[in-house]
Image (cartoon, rainbow, N blue to C red):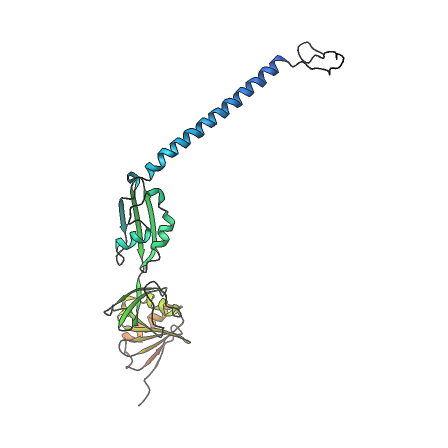
Length: 268
């Protein structure tokens, strides 16, 4: 065996064989050990520094320096800025670190008029809320008052004067703002799609077993049928009304587009 590598020593009585280690291997082992100890010391120092930094930064980030002091609300017309900020939990100017944008947006969207909301954090002290509100498409009598509802049937508001929308008939009395009217999806879809030229001619829209029915302001009823093929059915109604409009009490059937029929009022 080469000298200086692994040399065997003869076993003395009562002793085991001993192996001599190359000095270079021993030096490498010592170097590795020093590096490991140095790495552990650095990691411990970094951890201690981070702990101190966190202890110092935490109260600073929760101080008034990083509070939500500059609050902006855009897109809210029927909902007050204060209502939006209160729903989002921003009225008390909390630290930005404590503002959960997703939860705040969801809370704002529970307000009756709000369809979507987006909460944006702008460090160090600003929050911007972007709101898109719902559009009323019909009104429902509510005990001497009027409830405005959107296409989904959500009750947006209750007002004392007639808002001048298409009246939704044949439905249960509406609940409080934020609740929903059920069983009138097709009727609300038709009401929302009414073109401007027909909007002023339609007094009411209802939904029954046979589909959607319209009541025109001149006393003519319209059997609209399903809420599909709306454009073609609207054209049928507009064509008939633009010509020799049927007398009050007549029924115009446009449930089969392009083949409208008119039933005159019953005699007597």
